Length: 367
Image (cartoon, rainbow, N blue to C red; front, side):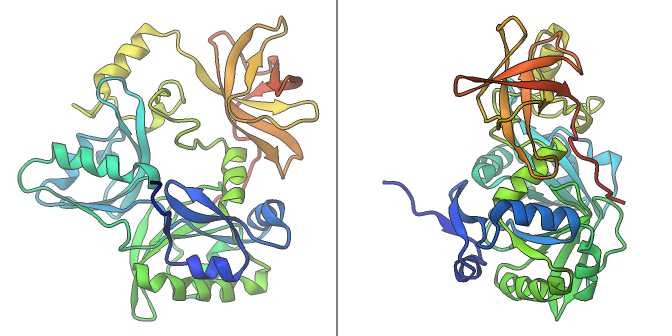
């Protein structure tokens, strides 16, 4: 029997707003809301402000003496490049193949405490791997339903967060544990849309009240609740990867051009040797951006062909860019492909001409 999807602490709010709901990693989450859907919500974030319920994302606590060193020996990025209180993007790799089990955010709270936020569908596996590798004295606690997460994104995001009395004077990827109406909220300067933004992490039961306050605070700016449909178009415009599409057990950091999140100088991390072997061997496909020059929308798994009709790659993420009004895609392409090359995307048997580009597809002001 298929398990019933889990619901976020804001599920009743989404239902009341008439949201279109769908399964995301075993969680029933909003895709879009009535009144304009993805296009309207996308535009609100690019031009003003929007809020997203991303409480389906996992949460786990790694604690105990030497927790930071332990986590640093597991995941790709180098925690020693930052200092608390700082968060960092990183990846959990399969040790044998260097495929990406998950990409996640690690909150460096102290030497003895790291709070990790994996993707919803991969949380159990990430927790399992950590628990299996943890030495005596290190505890891994699954806190998936102890916290909610609300992302506030867009040029007016600082004003909305400040209206609640929460801190906004944070450097990118810095966080602070703050108080809102006597409730503890972690405020992280971050986001998955490319815009100015924050991710607010309240206790699970405090999440509805915080959502309501944010809805009220963003009203003067014509801000909107936004679904995960707009989150996807926004992140694709920035060229940000989605696990399961652009990162996977079959797509390594080398292939995804994610070497910036790999601490190759570290003594160890899961998949380090396999990743180096692949790099030394070469020949693997690389991620590029594709900008459609004809009318059409690229979709995941569409074949990419060169001028002769030979297949040279495959789309990993594709959509219509609401900002550019053009089709855009991320794709894995053969070596030898270069920026500016003209290619063809096979969209259900119809050829869609496109140009090879380097993401991001749009430029935004994030300072």
